[in-house]
Length: 134
Image (cartoon, rainbow, N blue to C red; front, top):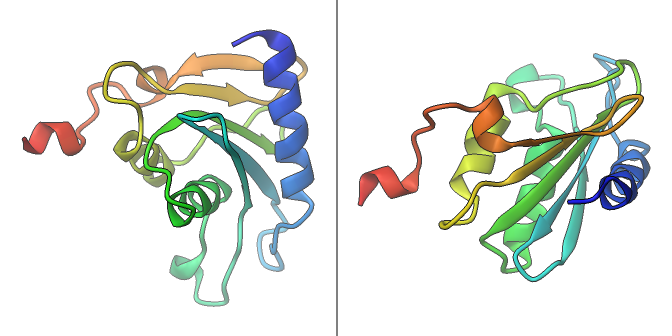
């Protein structure tokens, strides 16, 4: 993943963030995921008056990819306008782990003054996932 590719994905995540529905937290987040075939899906957080029913931007993007028939997520990029850098929450990390490639880790791109490019294992060490149930 080059810095230029990361910046381009973060630009798409920023566009998605503009569609966030955040009347309670006023904390918009945008995310994009890239599937195994290079398809890109975006998502924004969507809040609900019943707070546990809120859906994070990362999960919204993953679910859009799944709904389109993709089951492998190669990359996720995340942005939030109110902080320099935001990471996926614990629940989103687990969902991302569910759909990472079988033979290598998922790339995670965090927005900031400069993009931070990590692997999912960096933010979810010793993860438990579907391959552990085989």
